[in-house]
Length: 407
Image (cartoon, rainbow, N blue to C red; front, top):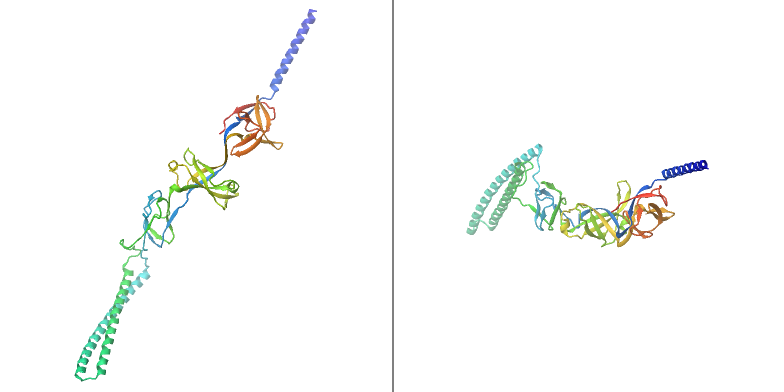
């Protein structure tokens, strides 16, 4: 009887050992919890927005150009200099004398010699005409005296008077010819005497181009002296207080933007974001090729900066900013990361972590804003959802959640 009892105890010990071994094997073969990243469902401020890169620009820039062709004197003003309306921006003077080649210079010297010879010829002609005039006047006086005595008839006196008048006219013509010859000689001499490329004297009249408005020099197209053509730009002036931002949005986003819509300007060089408002959405767009070589239809949107000027004094024309157009915003909105959502039988769903297990739950979504999506039904604030569910997670899977706070 005792032997039978001892055998029964041994059997019990064997059975117990087998059960323990099976339990250990079951625990060893059981799948370990899947590590997942998770976050809490949030309740708070939520904004739907469109964001894109923009550039600052001046609303009414003034490009100052050369009104006429001439020689531009050196422009002393530099970008960043302040000017008042009416200040002299730059000066224009007459073009320098053109250079002469050897052939043209020799021809000019010959022209001077010819002009000097013509002057000498007309001066000799003037002396001859003056001699004839004195003779004609003497003969007319003698004829007049003889006519008074009755020695010669009236016709003879009239003929002498006509000869005197003709001599006077010839003398005047010869005098004018001398003046013309002198002018020609001076003109021919100026071509030879002025050195090649010599600028006119400093006391010559200059054209002063003045500032049309008070503002800041934003660009200088010409700094050094030299010839300029009519209409060639020299300087640009703008009032930095009227600085605004131009953002070229995709046309599908631009149709959702309205005038006076709030805009947040970020990543412009300072930590504090600037506030703005949409001033105008341009009525026409344009095509721009993206970095991937895809044609995109873009629409210019102009944003007025409403933050105090003291906060963005360092901004200038052509600076890069990032603009966020707020399409809709709410204060008490339930939202989760968009990466937590997935499609399950044509419905949006998420995995909620409950008692270290993933539980499938259907949700209704609302607006989307960047990396976040509004949840209108199916979740409560404070619940934990898996942010990046994979194919290895099913309803009821054991998980080890690493809860993170997403911005």
